Image (cartoon, rainbow, N blue to C red; front, side, top):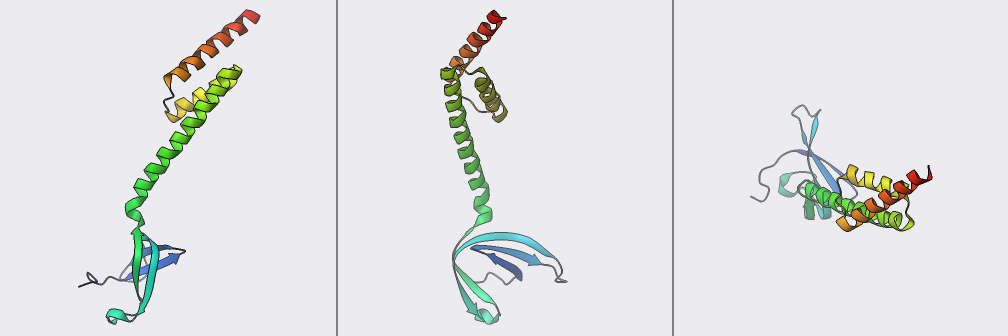
Length: 138
């Protein structure tokens, strides 16, 4: 049995995303059951003695990959932010910009990002020296 049992579903196709819903017995309520990213489909008319049939020839269950993609995207974004913070810290070290160093160190702590220890040590040293210089001026 290729159908695995028939179940009534309400389907919405937006672009290549097919979202399908379970329909209540009274036909008034629709509960989302899943989504498929459709790469190919074929209308089949009255195949299997049922109207409105179609066959998905190629697709991917988005529900199964969403968590994995989300984790990977978050990881990539965190890596990009880490690279940006490291670059800004290096800029602050070279220009001896205390404000820039403080802002980037706060961002690093807020995001829970670990920066290379040698960069952090250099940044702390610049802050220490610049703050000592400010105290001398006063």
